[in-house]
Amino acid sequence: MKFKKPLKELKLSVPSQETSVSNFLTASGTFHDGDLLLNMKGLRLISEENDPPPSESKEMDLQISLEDLETIKVIGKGSGGVVQLVRHKWVRKMFALKVIQMNIQEDIRKQIVQELKINQASQCSQVVVCYHSFYHNGAISLVLEYMDRGSLADVLRQVKTLLEPYLAVLCKQVLQGLVYLHHDRHVIHRDIKPSNLLVNQKGEVKITDFGVSAMLASSTGQRDTFVGTYNYMAPERISGGSYDYKSDIWSLGMVILECAIGRFPYIQSEDQQRWPSFYELLEGIVAGPPPSAPPDQFSPEFCSFISACIQKDPSVRASSLELLSHPFIRKFEDKDIDLGILVAGLECPQNFQK
Ligand code: ATP
Ligand code: MG
Image (cartoon, rainbow, N blue to C red; front, side):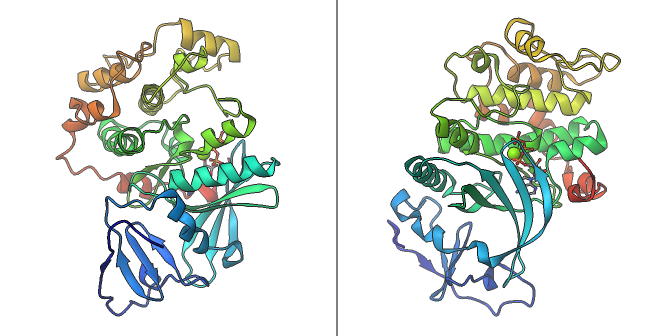
């Protein structure tokens, strides 16, 4: 594998007994974790500005093979397929294996796998790492970083609502992930929703399924055909117009408002728990007034944040970068709020029925 700049060599200390990056070697003898690349020649640090160009992402192919992985249990099901908790046989590291069934033509399959590799080659600590993606037996498989507290949807099922300080900390991390996707990678996520925001016991929140909805859409040649839900979709997307990064911001605002009020924002009140019909929902998003945070229940900073996100006109909606310095995010920055403590008390997602 060649890089534009020479790699810096590091000295390896004696590996600890515990499984760690330093003893994670596959049959191919290579492991790549973040900025670390480990192979038979030793540990190397990859320069941060140096994403391997697409043609050089082939090394990623060699890291993990399906035979190296043993299934522990199914941890989730989505519209596209199943997510399993798997363990690497040799190094005992856990991964989430997402398998999406797609019987598609070979040329489209090659294109999709290639796109996934390019999209997922570089990493940001607020985006779930995709270690490997491949096409096998009519399915696309993704070997993902395992997030041991499941998704924000799993968390919400247990806590119903999140208080503002926790929301600010969660939101800051999602915004950092979005800044990376929007400004560094120039991509729209397109499917920001509670089940695509994953949490681990350290209290880290990471965006997942980046590139997946685009992949599913491109496999049919039609945008947005495979969307699992329209609930969080921005009005300009629903009405079929052009859309950009700002459509992710609408979705983020909807997710955060849902976490705060404990119900999907287009359900009018807690008493009226009736879910709107598909057409009522689309009509509500496109033609109705945008939802907002009730000022008698939330701080002015929070209400202002939600209003900056949930603007029907995308040109008025704030960007991910602007929101990162919004007063609501800044308000709790020096308060040492630990999301890890909140999720520590919750049941592990794979232990309860969905
Ligand atoms: P949809 O298919 O409509 O997008 P979804 O996002 O819930 O819905 P999947 O992406 O297949 O569907 O994920 C299903 C569930 O699996 C998630 O809700 C989450 O609980 C779990 N999950 C997915 N990826 C991981 C991961 N990397 N680590 C831990 N759990 C995960
Ligand atoms: Mg998902």
